Length: 313
Ligand code: CP
Image 1 (spheres, helix red, strand yellow):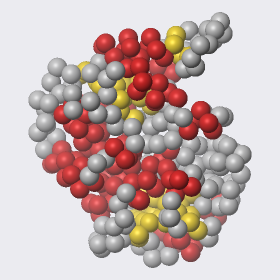
Image 2: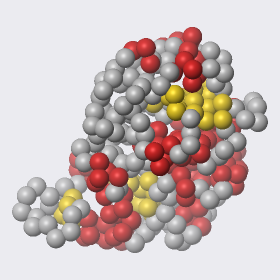
Image 3: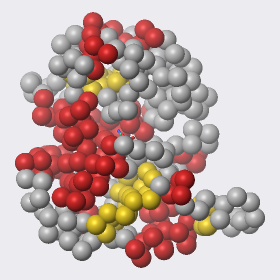
Image 4: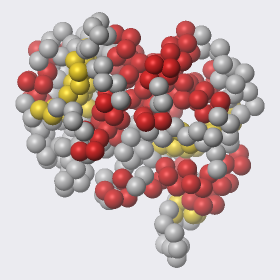
């Protein structure tokens, strides 16, 4: 039984990219693989792309999908062991996960970072709670620290558009009025590091350092213009500070991506994106924006991950 929890679960980028390309060309090729299988999708947080693209991927594979906005419609879950449950939590993850796993063959979970307790977020309490007690494969649909399906879709998109053997790919922080998790930036960085054929670097204001274990030896610039020089792909994303954890320390509009900053590079963002805060209209509406293609590739990223899981059952 295989889980898909992290970009490191992609054992070979080449074979996963080839599988995703196969699914894109012929979406129903593996329709028999999931016949009679049920995919449960649990959402503790909102979604547009993840929910619909994963549902579509399941449809292509002949699976039946059951979806629950568990964060707003389910019983509030307790994740700690040994708790006296006399407060607001009505059900323990131990029972909930075992019950759900009787109804499903594969379970997708979306549970963002709280941005209140770094230790608990880094422990991936929700995702790992389901992994521990469900007894069926778990698919990460964005967890506290990672969004591997997005990163795989991004890798597919870059590969489809790269014009040189070693394109320069820049991950740039951009301003946002609210505190956002680091999951997308973490997974994008990890997948770039796992694919050293890309000339990858990161740029953000001081105070927005990502986890050093994730960044590794990737070059980091605090001067955005220096980082963007000669870029082929500019991946833009906001994330909140790691110290103080979850803080918004900077809203400098000079970090917003404009056509002048982008130059001839492709613009990438996972969406949803705030226009004229993260990026100017002219970039999103221009020919170099790949955001709609990234969202389309979410279906084939999910399909590749589900095929790998189904093959392991
Ligand atoms: N990029 C992404 O995960 O989109 P949603 O939050 O809409 O699912």
